[in-house]
Image (cartoon, rainbow, N blue to C red; front, side):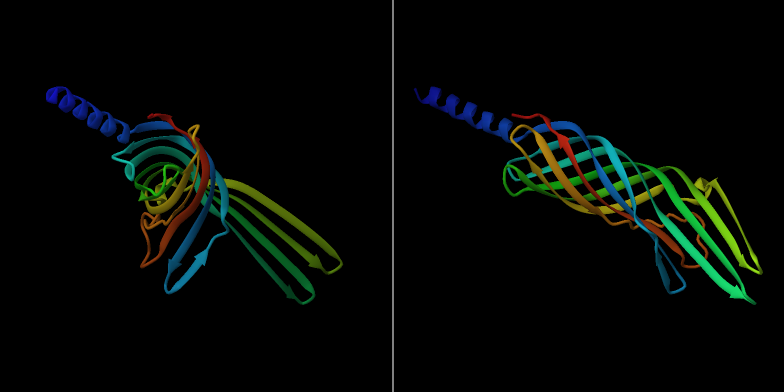
Length: 225
């Protein structure tokens, strides 16, 4: 009788351990707000933010009811936008010039995080996003006009330039985030990724270019109990 009770206890404990250790996986996608910031010679410049997206998959492993780890592979375009205008009037002639630039950086991201489950549904994450820049280019539009002396004229030009050779491949970004999971496996998450890598391959002096981004999205968890 004692042996049967012992076997039952061991089986019960083993079942609890397996239940607590859950492996889940699935797809995720969402909205990303990308921001570029340039610094150098004591000055800083923030580019206009850029709305983009991310898509990929994840694997989550729970050690127990409170702690777990998660790894992901995502694709996400990042970058920023810039617009500069110039106006000057000389001897009754007004010159207007506008330059718009869109920095487009394609990236594969591998976020790895430690997760704390405050409840069965609510989790908080702290981790590192290892980004790999796969492509880099700028799309630009230049517009100029002249008014005065009894007439006016305008001209515009647009094009694209590959800048991959000037951009570093590695883009590291520590992040914090939160996640809420429904009983059916559907979840929502949000993160802030702080870019710490200098994207300029051959900087002059102390100039830097860093990319940070917000992410908010949705996904679905398969597996587990």
